[in-house]
Image (tube, rainbow, N blue to C red; front, side, top):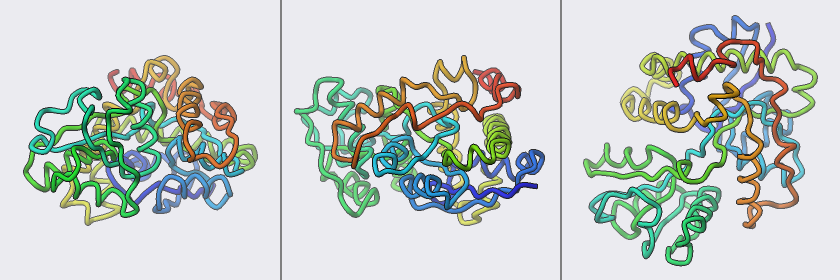
Length: 321
């Protein structure tokens, strides 16, 4: 049995349910891998941990992978988990005054982002639809997403930027109708990645492939049985029982809206589309987020995906897409 450390991007939540289900159902064990889960402190931390070899594999956003690469690290994304960014613009209906359905409705509005990376993606979206100069896109508040949620609640901003389901969390907690505008529906850039470093991947290639096979099974099983996935999540963190409905909504949103693209349907689970990486790199290059040069084509590989495994090769068919 090979031991492997898996650095999560954040504390356990619905977006991570497939990994906990894969472990609970013994998929990692069947592949000969003993996986130790490490709770996270954000995608940049997770990507850096993997790049430095402090964790064998990490879950991190693609933008964090490129940001870390610009600092001189060498992160390597070995599977694309979600084809779309989870970033979303959200608001409350009684604050915005109408359902938020299209980016163009943000003209003349004030929008508060929760993080630098989501602010960058929002700015790119507004630029793409031709209204960047008409939107007051605030700088990032150092108190992060909790502060922007409060700003939406008290009406001091028209909308906020976070991740999908942030708006529905407010709706659930405050009994006020929320609307969300997923940025990934309009901006074709990557979301979450499974990341390692080239040395570990080269030395432990079969371990990496085994982890990816088991993880693909976890995603397929979770998509087929979301309640079981949330059970596995709650088994890891019992305090999430009171948030079960929201955590299930997070996972189902990721499974339904974020993980698929025509490329995934054609090429299979985890397979990278270089064009999405290059679009993301172009968006980041227009900002001061990057500390040096980046090469998006060097940030990923499909070499460790076992396309002979049916759940990888036929993933879309297996989950009914």
